[in-house]
Amino acid sequence: MLEQYSGAAIMFLLSMGIACGMIVMTSLLGPKKHFADKMEPFECGESQLVSPHQRFSVKFYLVGVLFVLFDIEAIFFFPWAILFRRLGLFGFVEMLLFILILGVWLLYVWKRGGLDWE
Image (cartoon, rainbow, N blue to C red; front, side, top):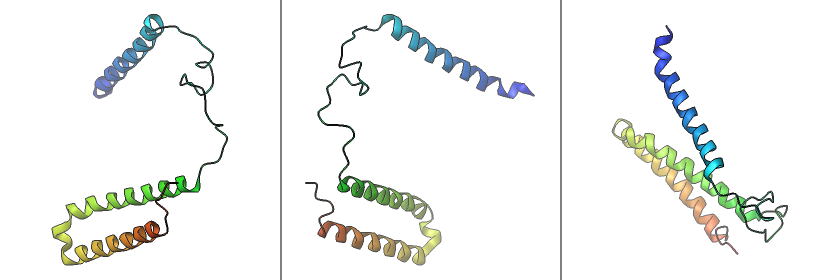
């Protein structure tokens, strides 16, 4: 019964061995340079220019919402393209209506200056 899981167990052990080996080899062979900027919580080795506690611009959130919206639009295109022939004219008109609504909304945001980053 457990024979069917032997391949997965071997792959798991092999991947864990490689991961642990890389961590050990990095700690043994890697450079050990310690300086004050590197020990800060930001951890990139550069001094911070602005406080991390400042607020984000509202435009940042607008761009995030637009990204999610058009990402979902792209997700709707894939099944529509797969079933295009089976859906026929009804599916084509529905997708055109969907694209038209999104296009009008994008034009509205564009005209209102929502995409201008200043």
